[in-house]
Image (cartoon, rainbow, N blue to C red; front, top):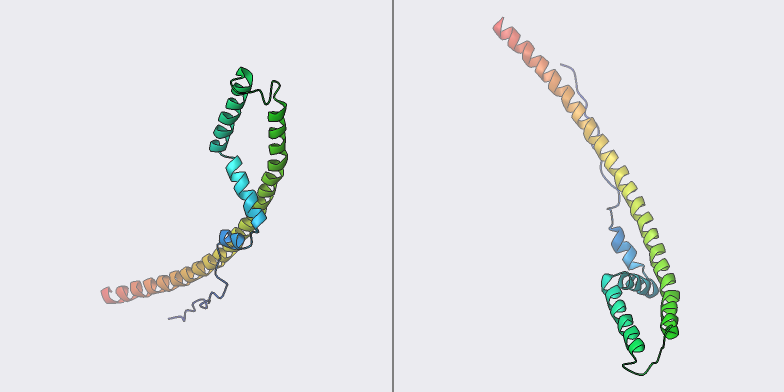
Length: 152
């Protein structure tokens, strides 16, 4: 009977995988937190609906003169407020999007590292299975030979 060798047992001494979201949130500054909150709030249906109701009431009150005209048609003050809002929120939303892009790149790199580790693990498992297959084939051959000697 031939001597079989099994692949060397590999010890997995790599660092544990950390949650990228937790790592990223640990490093976030108050300004980045604020820009994320603003982007989340302004990018919601709740904000759109509230803003629509507010400016609809604004227009209604100024057109009907129900209350003193503080912003008569063509609503210069309302346009000024909306322009100011857009001037401040657009850069904050961009900052939030840039931060999200950085986070996405970190997650992609983390996925790559995990995939590399998984590839090594799978290769090790496949080597072990191949060695076991060789042993099983040899045992099957020996068993068949032994059965042939007993019957014959």
